[in-house]
Length: 392
Image (cartoon, rainbow, N blue to C red):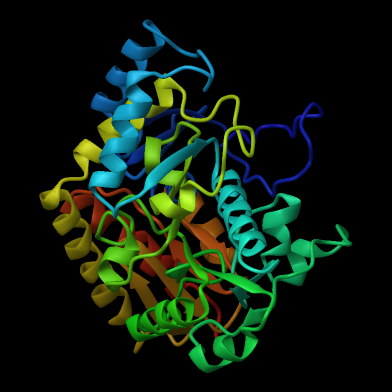
């Protein structure tokens, strides 16, 4: 493989792997040398329908030839249609569109602060250890991980953190300054951490008791990734505010914040905005994504998720480095007893793309359109990579 030279014209912000991709189709990517890779990473849970999905590509091209931008000082049909479809398939709410997950969470945090301001001058938002909510100053402040925060202080104050899944600890943090709770249904970046549905039901009760907003960050778990359109639907607890991004337009930049009408209406004209948010092109793409995520496709995601968990869990007896396998739908984490970077490298060199997060968790984020043969192909490479780990 001919490794691309690092570009002197780009910020050195990413530990880029030595691959230059030039084409994608379905579950596969091709590099500049023509080598094919099975993609179990999906650009960080973004291309859930695979690369160059025909319906998404056609809708995007047609809209680009018709109308690209007019600003949010005017209406466009794709934006109105997308808002209606998201509300129809989630909970009674209103939508605000932006360009990314961090922006979706920024809107959520402003809603929380406005709610607190109007109900006694409260401003604190309870978050959870190992959470990840974005890289703007506000969302970084809400991300209680020193490795992301170091060097950017002073950050915004007002984000007390409790252990994920510990309802009693969260309850003890509620005080006269608390206005909201922000939580991921599954902590993706934190290591694919999962907790009980009862935890979220308990948070709902805390919010009801203390007049707090319950805000779900579904940037990574949303848009089919967990086997329902949104993870809160599997959990059985509705939020007051929902943040969406990543997979919504299958690779085009879009974020969305849904909020119950009485919460959304706390923001008035001029209180918040986005120049590019919810443009016609990305909204047309998102509508095609939602159309593709019908009941049959969501069933397939759940079935694939069970297959991944069952098969990988069965390897534990012969691969001692595997500590635990956890996941929901096609968000799967393999926690190792050592760093997982060598697994990522081996897989890539053998034509499979995976990711490692929280240092020791190999994370799988495969596309929803995998065939049985592609599942077998990817798992065979992954198993070989894990078996190749030297004894500890």
